[in-house]
Length: 577
Ligand SMILES: *[C@@H]1O[C@H](CO)[C@@H](O)[C@H](O)[C@H]1NC(C)=O
Ligand SMILES: *[C@@H]1O[C@H](CO)[C@@H](O)[C@H](O)[C@H]1NC(C)=O
Image (tube, rainbow, N blue to C red; front, top):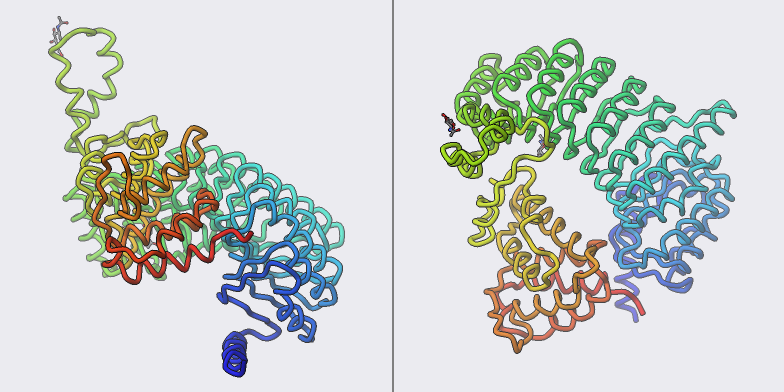
């Protein structure tokens, strides 16, 4: 009809505004492209676009046949350079992604394209997805690659190794042609690369030596992987941004990184937040900062179990960095006096406005020093004094104290009472106060082999969700991800029972068991909306949720927008039959 034509035209012209030269964008259009026919319009646009350089496909979902049709149209585009292909396989089976990527890659190779940007972030393609781009990565088309973005792709150790080998091969072949691969930007946060994946990639980084930005947060990398990365970074003197947030350095990794920093004179952003750099690591980093790093803008050493003396060394080190914009030391062990000393020092050099909040400080370990010393001696004493009751009362008090560094374990001492208190009477504040390792702590406390307990825990955590507060929102979603990804990957976990119990608890179905529904709040539905989009959530459950969500129901009345959001996401992620 005429009206739909006008709407289509409008959408079309909107899509083409604000777009770079030579770029065709379908960004965020939520198109479901299953077969060649549904991709017809895009194919036609590509064919007619002379000198096409970039294609934006993020926020659509592309199946194998549609990808093949688009690929066919790309085969003649020799000027093509930039693939903005993040989030383009939502709701697709994992097995569909490698062949779809393969045909797109083959087309670019056939076209003789010379890529500068390859962005495949937020495609949960797993290790096999990397195989789908292996051939492309080794080809002439990638000799010129500058940006490789693979955030949140579930690559794992296996995918990380394939990726590293492909980059190394590309570097070898391109060097033989006198145009060595010189990647500038590498992004692979949230991929479970762990030590072995990171170590493999470190080899590729060391060979290239051209990196300017490296983002690998949240990859479960411990000190061996961190040390390998540190060595590699020394060979990349142009590095400006190093983001390894939320990996586990401990002293060893942090000291190795500090050593690497001495070679990195262009570094502007160092994000080692939530990396457990510990006091010794922080002091080593402080030393490197004070010796060099003239253009440092941001230093994040938050949530690292750093004590006041080490934090003061850091403050001392940044004092004369005239380009500094941000220093984050939140969530450490400064204590009240330490916080004051840090603030006073920053104030004294007119830099207080650059200091981030210290509101999450975990308190002064000095207070527990006696306990600490006893902890260290504990083993010896225990052996000598087994059964000596006069020694006992000191052990239980350990659990009610604020966390303090346990010298040889990477994770803070567990605090079961806090977690159970949060799960019994959840509040945003309590969740945040569980500290940086909250997701792990809560996960350990929930029996994920029991579908009902898991559903109840999910709703408890989700109840404190706050859309407008990023800290709370991220804490909630990370914790929920930790629990549910573990649950759904546990063989004895009954995913179907989980969904049924959830529906009962949400008051959407009646149960013969005496399960009392909860009072549904928007956070429940907002968190669920996040969950159904995650790779761990089996998509065969989506239709059931969708069916019950769409019925008119009293229990959801107060959730207005959250319910609409969930419904449209369910529609989007539902597998196509
Ligand atoms: C520093 O890292 C912490 C922990 O991951 C994060 O919450 C915070 O936002 C970061 N600070 C800055 C300034 O980016
Ligand atoms: C028990 O331990 C205390 C110190 O903790 C010590 O003074 C006492 O002698 C010990 N008693 C025995 C029977 O070992």
